[in-house]
Image (cartoon, rainbow, N blue to C red; front, side):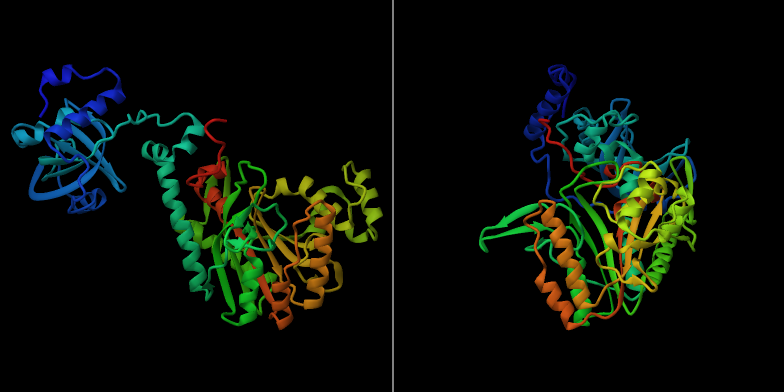
Length: 498
């Protein structure tokens, strides 16, 4: 295939060397990227099958495997090839490997993908190995791989070239395998609990279901401005109206044209569900059962480490009303405060900078965020939110300023948000109109009333509990990832030019 003279004529530039080798390979073997190659087993299957093979034992079994070359020693006599499931050592020696196969070795670089047929053995040192009989070039890599043991040290490059990150970083590879397992686990849990999965539109002509800045696009045929979904809520509730099912859920992609941080990405995943004839306390129980199930699936226990903390997903979680949490942290008793003005005065007296037009509920929520959120390390349900900031929840009986809403916190992060859903059509319209007026006052002139949703609610929606869970943040916790970009395969990033 390639003699020493050929090797000596190659360029010293690593990328150019690979290009020259590709040219030589095309001339000498023809197809370098064959369409057909069939392995008889994956590396993981091979490792499992021969787990008990003793050292220094050679079988008579002939297998065909394939993978990317991660290391090469002794001029290619020893190579390690990796596929998605593991590593296998390839041994090519004149006593076991025909000349035609060995002639290919000088043309193989780290990063190339090859197929190998040969006999399975285990070396004296215990390495599961294939004595190569044939070697097939499947893909010539034109770019060098990052140094295997250090991977990509540039964090931004890891996100931009995720294929290299996963290729050289076992932690990243494992994390995304676990992400897949968690999302599948959520789906199985919900289905086993009797929920039906549906799909709702990503393109909305009227955006709603949450307070957020949308991404805007335009439909040419319909001549209609549209918005990428910020939440599936209003469509899922219409499903309850239809009586298609009493328990509905969607694992959905949402898009919010807002800031980027270690916990925020413009495109993110949520699980949102609605349960007819249930309430927010039923949803608390659901969250606890789901979280416990996922922790057991990933870690085999309900306890796991996140950075320097030990987290327990064993239910029941702590439950605390927001006014009680604020009173304990600051001494301010919001239940005893009667007016918006009194709330602002009390907040300012305690050193909080509140706006002159803030309501009682807005002051309460702000102080909670400032003084309480950071203390919620273990999973906790914060209940009894102000109605001022919760337009879709039912009032707490006897406390009309509060609603049956909770948010689940862990590691000081909000992971879930749930309501006893408002289904009074007249009250729903009143609150949505009020919310619309506030949006217009803030300059959100494109915000519209969703009359189709209100028409559906007029038809009659059963009482229900509703829940949304931030899947990405939940995965961050379960996989010990400090940034949301570590758990999103291809996160939002600036253009390369920036």
